[in-house]
Each structure stands twice: as C-alpha cells, then as structure tokens.
Length: 292
Image 1: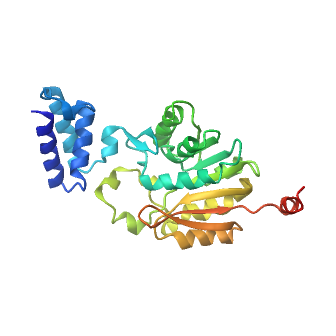
Image 2: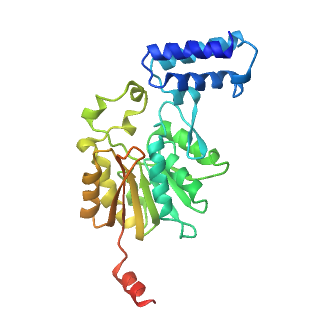
C-alpha cells in the first residue's frame, strides 16, 4: 500500500467514526508513521508501518485524542509532550499567554506563577514570549506533573520554568507577600452539567483538569482573593474562562479589590480571558504622583 492509498483509507475510516477533521487527522497519523516526507514517497509502506497505522487509526476512530496518539502537540512556537493524564494544550490558551506577556514587557526579570499548570503550556508560553521571565508552574496531579517536569526542562530547549507539586487551594500559604509580577491560570472551569455534553475526545482527558464545582467557578472563587496578597502592587492576574463566565469572573475580581478588570475574547469572538491588576499601595501611588 502506498502512503497516499493509506491516507485515503484512514480518512474514510475516521469519517465513518464521526471524527470532525478526518483528513487532517489522517495526515498527522501518516506523518507520524511514515515520516514528514510521506507525500513524496514512491515506496510502499512496510508491513510494520501498515500495522502501526492501522492500530493508531482504530484508536482514533474510538475518539482517543489525536494529541495523545502523537505524544506531542504544538503550542505557540514550541512543542509540548502530552499524553493520558494531562490536559491537551489548545489554541485558545495562547491568547492567555499573549495578554499576560504584554503586561510584562517593561519589567526586567518578571516573576510569574502559573497555577494548575498541567502540561506547562501557559507558563512556558509566557517564557517563550518574555525570555527574561522567571516562571514557576504549580500542578497537583502526579500524572500531569511528569509531563510538566519534562516540558519545563525540554520544550524551550532549556530549563524554561520551575515545576512544583502542590494544591492550588493550599499553596498560597507557602508564598510571601508581593512575590509575583503576574499570576496566570487555566484552571478547571466546566460545570457538572456541561461535562455531560462534551465531545467524546474529552472523556479521555483528566476529569480533575476539566470539572469544577460551583457551576464551574470554584477555582476562581479561591484563586482570585487568596493569591491577591502575593501579587506585587500593580501586578496582574490573568485567567482563562469558559465562554459564558466573563461577567461572573470579572465580578469576583471587582469584589476582591482588583482594578482595571478586563474581559478579552478568543479568535472566535467568545469571552476567553479575564485579567485584572492589583492596585498600587497608597504610599507607592503617592510617590508616583509626586515623582519621587
């Protein structure tokens, strides 16, 4: 069987299984098996390659995520190791990194804390955009921590961030006041009802990285007030949200005493990021006004 014949067969199999972008997925699987130059190959696939492709196609037809089958996935301009036990990085989250990075460009060596880090895509994404940033990534899941540790060491070709195991609901007790220039998080934010309506692929991803109590707001209700003290005056907190949570999360920031609360859309125009600034302390504000 030639690579092109294999591509058509896998595409047909995935279409019959209801995979949304069957052609793209089939091409990715074939590239994984046959190499990046399969489109120009004139030789037939080896029996071993045919068997491997058949197995991968069968797993994808059962809606196992493509990213897990490939073992890695691009994010911004780098690749992340992914697999069962860690949330798959998504393009919407790149917007979170870009917005946070914009607030750090004038700070020589900004200190950044990534809560519920998972694969590390957010913290490492900021580090890739702001190379001088000093990034710490917090993750509770032992399985996800394995991917986080690997990605922190290798995704950017160097030690891009410091991975730390810990629970976001307790980690604030280990922090010092006014420690971070920026705190970012893409926490679980899907409600129990929404979990029942998700696409089949999400059943393979870790539930603890997806679902949150309080109609999806539990993590924001804790993180926004509890970590405020550890932000430097003038520092920003930036979080990813579900598309229907903009007003609710913005209100949590306001009630916790933040200023310049902003809700930003993703590329589809849906609310995706909320960010807010810890106000300057009174004495710092006075100094700024007086020019001291």
